[in-house]
Length: 126
Figure (cartoon, rainbow, N blue to C red):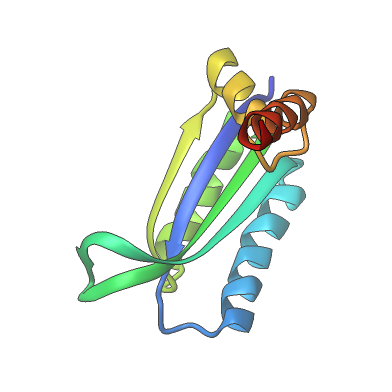
């Protein structure tokens, strides 16, 4: 039985853009090898951390929404722990309300997001 998950991880800021993309590609490949289906991904870029982690005050944030078997989560998190480029990560199971909210967020290209953005622009122009 597959479930839907969302994972956010923070990469060390000493990486170049290419190294960060390579690291993200590694984790996406791991999901695909484990028969996971990626629904959405967002690169949030370099952001300031709320508090220092490993004497670093910023990091590259990346979010991936995917569907997989629960057994794949243990493998994914083991790889996060083994990779010295990852300074923090969080993986959560999405319930039906979380999925509905995620699909209606602006920038996702969903029907609700498009309708919402159109209404907003009308109010601003009025």
